[in-house]
Image (cartoon, rainbow, N blue to C red; front, side, top):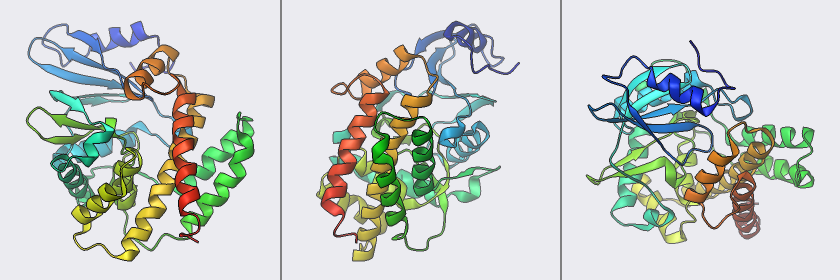
Length: 316
């Protein structure tokens, strides 16, 4: 049996309870936080695991075959919790006793080096990929999102032509590079701090080949990091930081916020995730924002235009 996209929450839970890996029927506790999937902590008496259910989301380029392949590679590299069981649309992974990171953690002089080290390990680990993964190019993502927003006549669709012009302008500034295995969704809640002090990367919806600076800039852009934290992140990753690296970092910092802004728009227009689950996730992650996808859109719209107005002349 394959999990149906239109299944109710009760149907999903009943399916999870019947998975063949349990020693006995597990207790399920909702895991709040995902804005594109449903997750539970399962305890069958032998230990806790995390069960994650997701589906292909073509408008975001999310393919579950790629998600599974990226997660398996990251598991082999030791930067994500061990993948225990997988089938179409469902993964079971080892439970990490700890917490997700918060914005302020990126400024922690102990945690930031651990975060950067995890991404560096991922970026040199392409040999661990065992099957096809997606290619993530944020500039094309923005163009695709804008096309959809125009077709669906989004509430702020008049801004979309300018968003595309900015994406094209930024793309033209990217130097030649070698694609690497990347996470491509470096928001703080997609990183965990274990009680043993170890940092883990989680949620591989967008994992695949991409540009390493998209990951490095994301951990700063999505946490509203200060210029000093950005400089330290680049130093930890590169050692010697040149003006050219700083320039490329600035390009990716901008496209990250533009992509996140339009990601929220697409979720407003297309998401089939239950409204209460989205509100709960938003309340947990962004308590000061409107509790829905509109709140996520508005947060990242504000972030992007502030950065763009500051940087547009410098990046000309």
